[in-house]
Image (cartoon, rainbow, N blue to C red; front, side, top):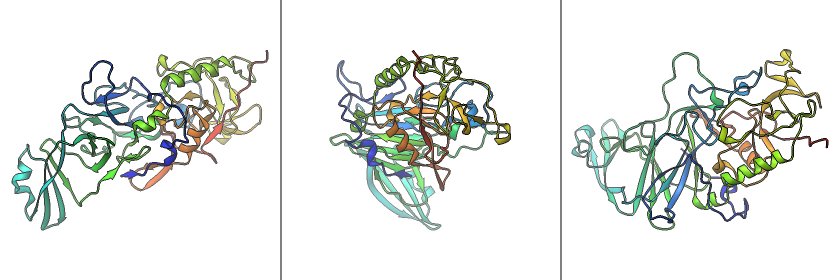
Length: 405
């Protein structure tokens, strides 16, 4: 369920920055009220790794064809349908006004768990472990004034703090009726210590409306580290600690990098037109005339053009006019989820084949990090859109041409 965090994510080697973490508009604080000017005590943040929503619009590169500009609809910092209430792409876990954690209290060994008073009492939190057909263990829980509890799952009931729905890698749209969700209604719960060092622990399953949990076997707790991946069997969450976020770039820094890249006035080497990354404030719109496009096999950056199609090699294949390599030709989009970045380095690399742009260190880290796929498989994917990475390295260094003047 939890993959141990890679030390590169939160290592002091990542960056020497000492500034507040990213302050994006896609963060919902589930915590206590604070006085004006005070910073809430943050336990950490959960970020949905960038898969597109089921049924969302997919890009040409993800769909396997390139015929012209098209809108981009993956998370990349925000849900494609917008962040609303408890259903969003990112959640900050802050200390609550009053502790709501629970801890084990009384254990019962019984043969008929469904008739237990503990399971019928809505005010009594309990977990039932079925060890065999004739043997179950019910553990009654009591209030814990030293911890805060946050619950994650597909259910929209009030006890769920972070509503997560199924996502599909790269935003592929399934034909026919929507498949049944693979994410549990009460997928997991996180308990955070209210006192320093504010350790966060994750547990399988969450309490339902009757304050009960039913499990086949006993589950063990896991301490979350910066960079831990949480597999919900339908979506993957990234846990970032406050210390880790201090070393990540801010949205302001990402915007400064975009403006600096555009100030260099990169040009299309064939059309000689000036290229520019669009502002994220425009939202997810179709690529415009100045949008940079890249041949993902070689990294040569161009403006959009309609020549070079190699239909005999597949609908997505184009021939680069500079080096003659044949491969996917896709628009470039700057990664906008700062919490997924390892450092504030320049946007020099793009993931293949989706074209999301980030620093070299960020690109190489995620290209070497297998992410859960289904229940038994792992595959490296773009953290911004979830598209499976291809090619020898999964990413490519971008080759821009400067202005001729």
